[in-house]
Image (cartoon, rainbow, N blue to C red):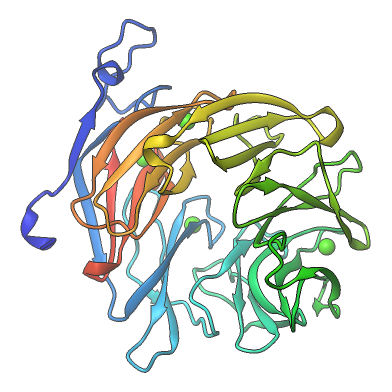
Length: 387
Ligand SMILES: [Ca+2]
Ligand SMILES: [Ca+2]
Ligand SMILES: [Ca+2]
Ligand SMILES: [Ca+2]
């Protein structure tokens, strides 16, 4: 399987994508990204690593404005290992280098911990600590800083919660029988002891399973939106200069299985996106907690059991989505209208099962490439955008 398939890439364009009377004309292959285009040719770049890949992260890790690819996995001895494949800005990747990552998880959170524009890593350690790897701006990372979070982390983030210009670590996880949120304030040379907020008892149906950070109330500080395993009213933990407050219901917020604060229209202000399972739909909201209003609703029945990745496929600064299912070859691409609605525009056959997905413009033409973690063939396959 896999390698015998030749080009193994098939872009199925909806006729309206390439034949359109709307100006400016949408035309694939002319090199110009135009709103509404979802164009992918048969150029695929494939790379394999000499360990078992488990996770794919695409971000600008060296601060040169070109997205880079970080692959993480485990080696033959079962230890976490990672390789950096620096983006050259022209669609190619530099020769891999060992990223020097150790830890207990191959699934890091990303964020800019020190404000230098290069994306840093937050990696779970085997005890109740985590490790922050600061990007060294040359494709590597400095020796990790240990962050005590006092809990067994389930999900985590790097964000400057207290607005002092230094990234902090936020972790949701288990502290014994309790589900808790920890905030470890970043300082110039490390992290302060964590301040831990108990949120729920483990196993409680209302216990949060994830969080997203975003400014929801009007004080400008990021708050933590708590998500649950099934559709349930989202809850809020307000953030401020001294970290997080108590868990509180927020009847203004929608019920959701997943909830995220994202910039949907590229204007810098962030919107709220809720993923609901019954019925399967995405609902976008604008405004803050007390002025929240529904901006758009998109039925996603056909892809409701899939995972999604976000990026800008057509270069119009509006967030687009790629839906994939681990092990399935096809990626369903839905273009965003910037008002909280998405329209299915194309299906791309990656030719081999897609385990993880990122949408990132590796060659600088404005249109995203599909960076697919194709772990069954030992690495990634990149399908170039052909705007
Ligand atoms: Ca880069
Ligand atoms: Ca801070
Ligand atoms: Ca877009
Ligand atoms: Ca591109």
